[in-house]
Structures are given as structure tokens and as C-alpha cells.
Image 1 (cartoon, rainbow, N blue to C red):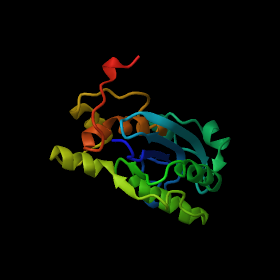
Image 2 (cartoon, rainbow, N blue to C red):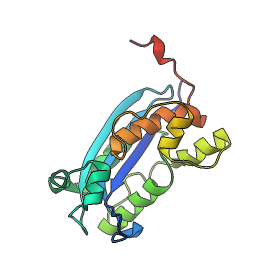
Image 3 (cartoon, one colour):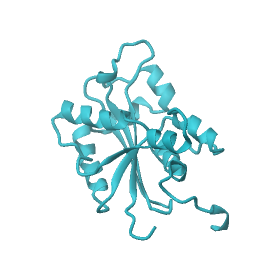
Image 4 (cartoon, helix red, strand yellow):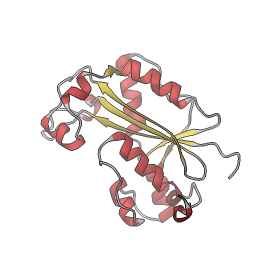
Length: 190
């Protein structure tokens, strides 16, 4: 696939609660994980940033248990406006590329966060691809979560689930099963 531009995979973690106290439209990004993947499946670069929430700076116990993100991680982080600038710079690394996420949530959450902070969308220059839908279409199944997709293709989870960079890297591993990359024989790599 020479000349095929890389794909930027993005995953986000956000404030959350299990008691209904944080509505979906009030969730705020607390971690960004992004990975550039070449057409042959190689990881070219990664980005991981914590984000300090504006409306609800105190994480719930549920959120910390789910994401394994500590209050001190977000307290020490920059706000979304600064992180959006970092993400925009990271997203400009390759021409003709697109960005992708597992489902529509990440695309919608970036748009919400940009509106909340009155900043430009850092990914606006790239078209978005919903890999959850692409995977389901390629497999002729209903859409499933990333963990289920990994099980379907016989791959174990690598890293920590509900951590943005780990999840982005796991989604990148699913690209060949979405019909976007040729499977890579990693047995011969050293």
C-alpha cells in the first residue's frame, strides 16, 4: 500500500458517574490518546495527555475506578484549550490522512468540548471514520464494543481498558479486521 496515508486513531476518556449525576452532554474529556498508524499497521507516533475538566473538576469515585485516572492526574493537567492545540499539531503530521475512532462518541465529544471552550476543533481538517461501523460491516455483524471486537478476532486486550492511549492502540490493532489494512505477519519481526 505505498502512498497510502497513515490513519490517526483517537480515543478519549471523560468524566462520568454511575448515578446519573453527569448527563452525556455534560461529560468532559479527561484524557486523550492518539496514535498514527501506517498503511501496513506500524505505529508511527503516539500522544497521551490528561485534561483538566472545567465544569466538574472533581472526578467521581466511579470515574477513577473505571479509568484508573487519579484526581492528581487531572489536577496537574492543562485545560482543553491547550490540549486541543497539542492535538491539532499532532493531527497535522501527515497529509491526506483521516482520523478514526471506535464509534461516534469521540467525534461528538471533541465537538462538544470545543464548543464548551470556544476553541476550534483540532481535527476539523481531517475526515472521520467510524471504525465500529466499519468493523461491523466487514464482519457482517451488529456493531460491538472494542473489547468484544478483540474477542471476535481472537486478540487479547493489551494495556489497560478505559485508558485512552491503550484503547487507541488496541483499536489500531483491529484495523486489518476492518478491511483497511492487510494483516501483518508479526511472527517474523524481531
